[in-house]
Image 1: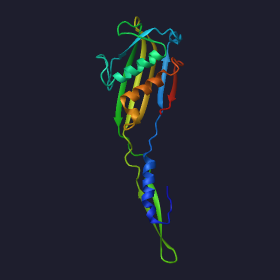
Image 2: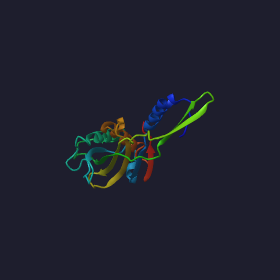
Image 3: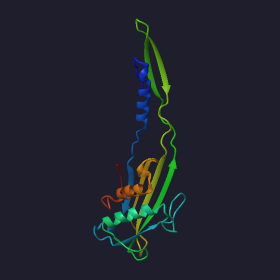
Image 4: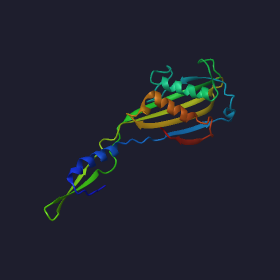
Length: 211
């Protein structure tokens, strides 16, 4: 944006305003996709359930060894939501159904995107107002904030048959400095988004605004 000013003393204010505007973070919505078998749609008849880590693949947290400190907040958040919607918590090995949780978290530094901010400054000299203009092309955006991406998937299985009766996955991307990047806050946000209006429509995808 090019703006002309009549006094060069306004330069610091312009730079400060541009930098503040460039730093304002925006929260991307959580993206959710889920599927379910017909029998899970019988509200209030969900039975007992336990939460475990699914076998982990490359880059995933958890695995057959059980919940680590990193994945524990996500297990807790998933169980809290399952209890809220009507499941009964049970010890692992004795529940009628099992919720398998997979978690992936990654951190990256995005590249710059967009042109530098252009600031135009106009000055006046002499008794007749002959002007001298100065144009500044300054990149005021600074480096983009570091991002944290979290992908959580949950598969609910019938313990006896091993058959999947419900599956869902939720993806979140936030700036690393935001509170929602912390495991406890991230876990609650993802679990609430994943289980809203459970069991949902089979094959649906939707987004949930983060606050």
